[in-house]
Amino acid sequence: MSKRPPFPAGPGRPNANDQALERASFALQMQRPGEAERIAAEVLKANRGNVRAAQVLGQALLMQNRGAEAIAPLEKAARRGEDPAVETLLGAAFALTGRRDEALEQLRRATARRPPYPPAFLEHGIQLARAGRFEEAVAALESGLGFAPDAVDMLRELAALHLKRNDRVKARELLLRALKVAPDRPDLLTGLAQVMLLNGEYASAAETLRHVVALRPDDALARADLGRCLLEMGERDAGEASIRMATRESPQLFGRAVMSLAISSRGRFFLRPSAAAKFLRG
Image 1 (cartoon, rainbow, N blue to C red):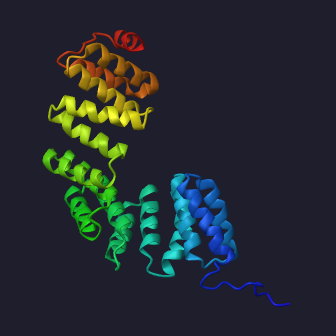
Image 2: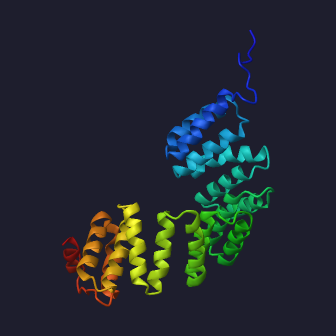
Image 3: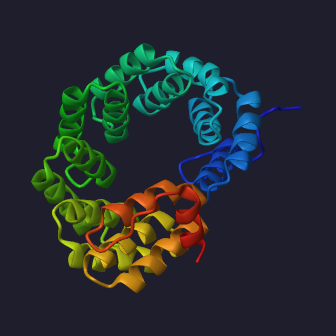
């Protein structure tokens, strides 16, 4: 009996593996990496040369912080061809397992591929920054933006690097550029609010942070920063209430909350941590 499928795949008929990997990709988008891992592993077991299955499997494992397990299938897939998507994931897996030099070399190769693959530039910039090589990180991200000027994640990472160097003007410019593409992204709005806070633009920062909290009510960090803005604006009761709510939602913000209260011109200073804890508990 023929082993060929009764309906061979053609231009308009994806085969079973392709359909399975579409389901796996959708699972990744829906933040279900375990399901994506299972599907991709089954496809890869049936066809060990399926590069796309290895890519999906690697991505699913990385989403679960299982970088060491992701390396083997990604390395095999990378040897089969010059695929920048696979190389980028492999670089991220190396980085996650502490193999920084191998990660940077892998990502350098991925950024050299043509046509360019923008996520490779993003990951390269992130890993260079983590290695403390800030000038190279800026160069990598700027190079990527040359190919993809509206890449929001690259704009965000580059803005964060400029903010670390206290270049608030450049950071604001990049964040505003990103917000034109994605006007309701909470991370971009939070970054812009940080620039405003540093510049003493408390009313504008408070307005921006209110928008973040409306989009993401469980964002305790944004709520804590909103409280600081309100304190500086003279709205002491509202500011303290916002900070209290933030620390109840996220107890690890206790130190930041105490600092916000202490450094504000209209804040409070506590001699004992127990007194601060009692105050924040309300």
